[in-house]
Image 1 (spheres, rainbow, N blue to C red):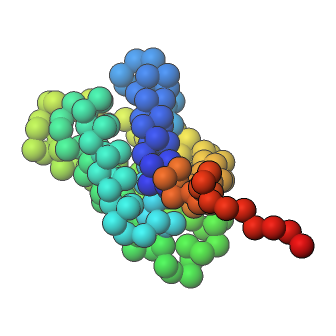
Image 2: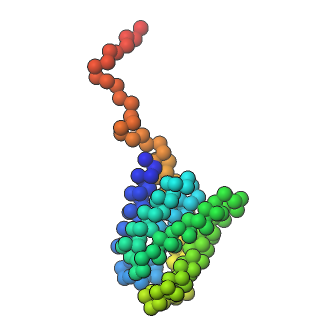
Image 3: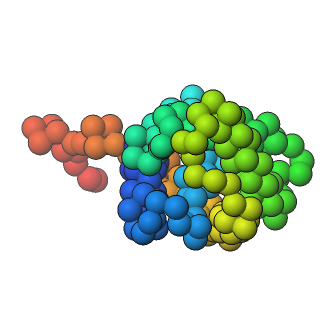
Length: 180
C-alpha cells in the first residue's frame, strides 16, 4: 500500500511542478519538489520500491517537461545514488545536516547534468544562470523539512493501512459463539 500511496504522491507532485508552479517554462522560482521526494525515497525506503518510484518520477518528468529525454531521469537516479550513499552515515542521521546535503546535492547534480547534456546536445538547453539555480537550491532547502514531514505521515498511513482484499471478514453463514 505504501508504494501505491507514493505513486499517487509522485504523480501529484509532478503535476504540481509542471502546471501550477511553472507559469512559464523557464521560471526561476519553481521549487523542485520531485528532488525532495527522491531524497526521501533514498533515505527512508528499501532499494527496490525506491528505484521503482524514482524511475516513475524521472519518466513522468522527462515526458512532460524534458527538452532532452533522459535529463530528469539522470538527475533523479544520480541524486538517489548520491543521497543513498550518505543515508546510512552518522552525519545524515541528524536531520538538520541532511537539509544542506540535499540542497547541495541538488545544486551540484543540476550543474553536472547540465554540463553533460550541454556537451551532448549543444544549443538545446536554456543557458545556465547562477542566481536562478541558487534560488531553486534555496527553495529546495526551504521546502525539505515540511515535505519530509508530509512524506512521513503518508508513509505511516501507507504502512498501517490494510488493503481491502486482505481484511478479515466474518462469514454471514458462520455460527456465532454463545457468550456465557
